[in-house]
Length: 366
Image (cartoon, rainbow, N blue to C red; front, side, top):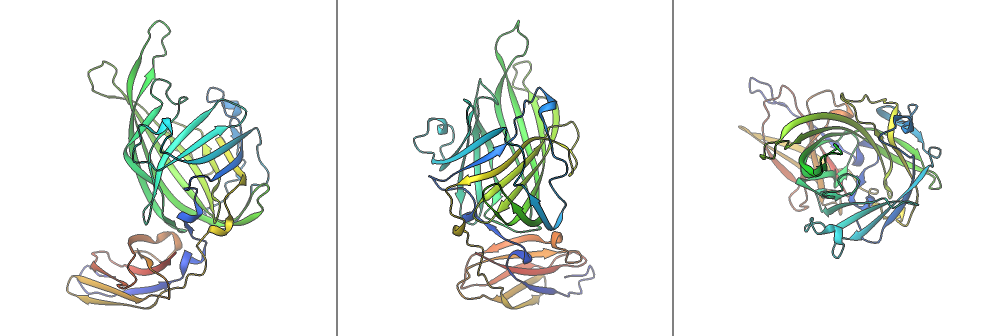
């Protein structure tokens, strides 16, 4: 830590993996061709608010440990998610950089939609956009500008991240006397926080450790109403989404709020979707988040405005995450600074901070 009068003091902590909670890695997520899972979900009609699911507080509380009993819940519909190589998929034409297509099918209906992405090692799931005729029948392929990393490569309790992207699409005119459509730009901005941990029980898939990801989403819509290329603001809506991430199962449950003109609270009561995984061909044993040792001999050297942080790497560990906190070392206070992936150089060179106080720690990663 560094005081504002340039007197420097530093607190260093050698952190065990996962901050004493489970760690979710890319190997836990669905990102390989041939994988699939099925999930129970509720039916939702966006034009009939009475079909929204009443959550009854099943989301639990921040912190932990929590126990989420998702063995019971709505079974109105079954969603099937199949993961295919995007090459050769006709709907992938507008997403040439994508490697994987996630095909979502509502079983028993003609409803099919796609998400196109690639898994970038050391970074996370890079999403290029989606294909969905129900979102826009005039232009179902919606390209993200820019692509987003919606779920990082490694996820711990207390992590935070943000995404922002814009799509340009076409929306059919509502007026029955006028045919055609108008260009619309929709900007999606999300703030994510891994705010809870505990145990989740799933239908037919027993129970296990998990993390809860809390997403606050802002959806801003603008339209080219006069055909001049100038997009005028139309409306801003808000949504609140929760994801439960379990080792070996990825996103095993999800609850999405209804959209509203103001941000829904954490304990929102009406949900457009409550999804619970119950079947998969993914082997839970593919998770690589166990058996990782903490670093040792963590130390720092200060030279003027530069700070050299060094440590001794445990055997066979090549990836580390340097984090810092300005507060009281509460789990949610830690922020990522950088990721180091070179075993032969376990150090980081930083510029001394102007913060009143700063704590550092190094976390071993899979």
